[in-house]
Length: 116
Length: 120
Image (cartoon, rainbow over all chains, first blue to last red; front, side, top):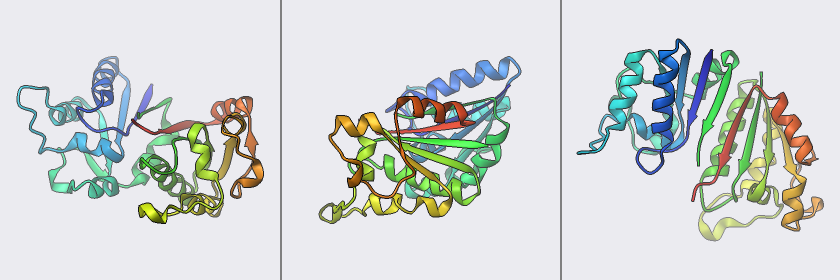
């Protein structure tokens, strides 16, 4: 099954990215394809500048999902609005436009929005 | 492929309806078959004659009125209008008022549903 997750919220203030992290790991483990699109504040989840001290590091989790085979993209315009440059984004995360999402949409079996 | 964008958030106070607007015109501009429905406080987005200059914002109603130019169909939820005592004639140009049954049909017929609900 091809799963697409849209994440609109940022790290730590909301649990959405954590939910997507666990869902994605399980789904990949069962042989499903996963595409995650980080949108609006969701782009901040892929900031390699995240320093979370003793807490879980969301950016490292995003990198882990990429290493496990998840495709992850983010909205470059949203990122720019939030001061997140391309070079600050976790390796393997595609920095693109809405077209990234549109390209993935027709193939999905399940599309889930994670917002407020 | 059909995409439905559900907007549930007042026009000002959060960026949610503005982000939904950018999304739907972006999708429409890429020839994606896109519909949008305003629900809850999202129906205030469709009120004609908004004047948000005092808060340095742009009139979202004027923006939403143009979504048709990008091929996007704009609907407003009847029950939400009634709950807020908003008359149809006070709305910007739209493609129709739908009730909950109509909303369900829109959701059923969509390949992807994108929800834009305002956060607290």
